[in-house]
Length: 163
Image (cartoon, rainbow, N blue to C red; front, side, top):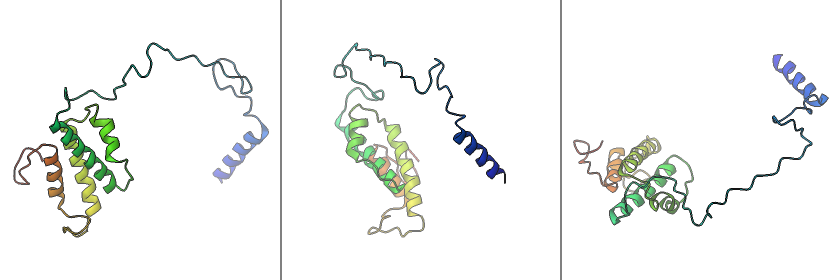
């Protein structure tokens, strides 16, 4: 009953025109007034001259080892999103946005491996773990393989650098 009364009250306000005279800003303009002119953007430097960096570079230069680790990170990011049931952008987009400006640290790569493990475990729960299936490895083996690509030596479940 309360819903019907509330709906009737809102319909009355909307249909009676009571809401049409509301002011939308603090400059005493009404809806039918023209908007203020746009301020021109500051033109201190052209967009071509200034590179916008979305992150702080984690390495001074991109070595072959860094590039391999970062490409691996991007591949595992795509895999994580795929296991999560989304349709991710290709790894190439990640490479351009994260590897070229050198945004991905080894810690970020390791964190991605653990996120991958969570999604892999959820996607493979109750499924057969076998080489010719969607889940060819155990969760631990999948995470260990990911960590190896990040340059971390895990030593398996019984020992190693990261777990």
